[in-house]
Image 1 (tube, one colour):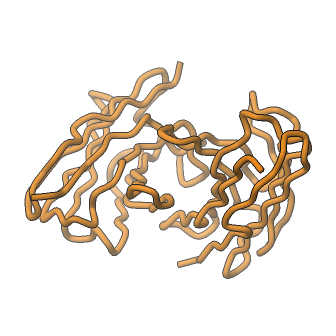
Image 2 (cartoon, chains in turn orange, yellow; image 1 turned 90 degrees about the horizontal axis):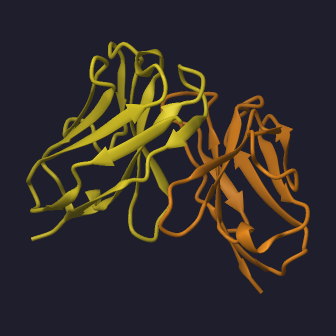
Length: 108
Length: 120
């Protein structure tokens, strides 16, 4: 199975900051990568699919890039509602559809 | 509105059984593969099981293989997860999720989750 790693595992940031989260696959997955946001007590919410396509309704401050094995999620100007945990997921080699371990973004 | 609503969670003793349900609405259920994902308290997301749109193909994570059975009733727009020989490590919130495009893509939407607690 393809293994997904994320870095950092957590970060502290302030409102207005630019935040970048990295996701790496153990082998090439083309652009078959999704990003999800999860807030405490809530279900994950799709943000980005196909590595860089923004899901309808997701603010444009979120962006994704990458292909192959290395991917990034960027929040250009962090808002208070963006404090959450972010997960990447590959869907290139399935099943299983493996998730990264998550990156928690909290308030500095 | 596309919606998934899980039910059936609760407290069960080790070695016991439980059946989770996921009621779908707002889309043609029979056209989409479906998935179960779980999250242990304070932990990340773990992929559990998948079923194809017609139910012919299923997948299980090694951690649940032989103990869990995924199924669906397309006439009722409902997904199931029959859980047996439950262990403490199966304690988690269980989410059902729809395959976004029908077969083996990203997941959208997700249900709200149902908590399963395995404890004596």
